Amino acid sequence: MSEMKSLRRKIDRLDKLIVRLLNRRAKYADEIGKIKDKLGLDVYSPDREKQVYENVSRQNPGPLTDEAVKRVYERIIDESRRLERESAEERRTSIQTGKSRKLFSKEFFRLSDKNLNGRKNVILLFASALLLMSIVWLIAFVTPYHNARGKGILVTIQRGMTANQVYTRLAEDRVISNTLLFKLFGRISSIQRSIKAGKYLFTGHYSDYDVLKLIATGKSNLLVHVTIPEGMTVRQIAGIYQHELGVDSAAFAGEALGDSMAAALDIPSQNLEGYLFPETYDFYYGTDPEEIIKRMTDEFRLFFSDSLRTRAAALGYSVDQIVTVASIVEAEAQIDSERPIIASVYYNRLKKRIPLEADPTIEYALGRHTRIYYKDLQIKSPYNTYKRYGLP
Picture 1: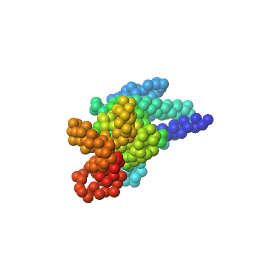
Picture 2 (picture 1 turned 30 degrees about the vertical axis):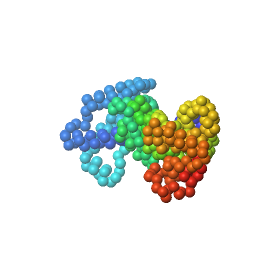
Picture 3 (picture 1 turned 45 degrees about the vertical axis):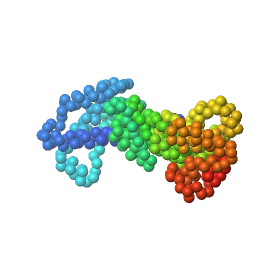
Picture 4 (picture 1 turned 135 degrees about the vertical axis):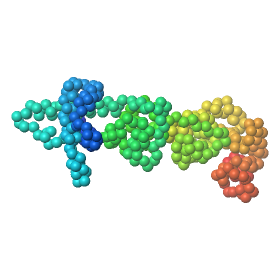
């Protein structure tokens, strides 16, 4: 019973849409009547009427016969002719008074009791036409729309855009085939309340339903190549992902610099500084920071093999200490050949228990990449390796 009520509500919504479309058709007929008045043409055009019947017959997938569809359209065309016959003066009066025309006259619905069978037939045909239109629209909504551009269309939905603004953008970019139908299904399904900001790539093989579902989930299908250079800090990496993927840089840095993420990933450190492996990655636009971080630490684990762990243990250092030294060396070295020399210097200072005096740690404490002055060396920070012994 509940299912039947639900279906009836959907039919009621479709009926409302159909009436709007029929009246829109009537307005076009009204405009045609004005043009015919100016040109002195006859209201009745048998060639045009024949063309209309041929067009609707081609669009008829069944189960209604072409003859049944034709009978319905005969009634619609009769009403269109009635509008075309109205004088230009009557049309101007209607506009001035603000009274909108109705597609169907009272006579269209007023059938005498003597013609009871005729009334039943009209009702049946009209209901069949509504059903036919509903089926045609539904098929159109789920059928892939092939835009004429050939290449994919990139659509950016910005934060704060209303549903109507999104629909307009999709229509202007020729991503959807029927804006009115798209809006209707968006409202009926309530999906329009879930539209997510982001960048979406449409190749022309998406139906209107696919488009609506994609922008509601927020899972962008735009694959972006992102290169993370060596020597980048967590905050610098966050800035790159914000620019390339639209990721919230503050959220990314908060996750990577917090101890909870390091613990969840079984990283032996208070944060993930130095554990986000520099590489070129493929991510979908808008990927969650957690997913990006996990991918980068997975790449780190592949690089930092068991043999390197064994070597670190033999030197008397933990994995975290090795990573810290490597990060400092990477930030200071200008060319590849410098890295082993700089690393050797730092390991010797650690062995002799003297301050590392590493400029990259001062830059990290200051929060910016800049020239180091004497006053900067006095900064109170656990990262000031001029004042503190050992690794930061």
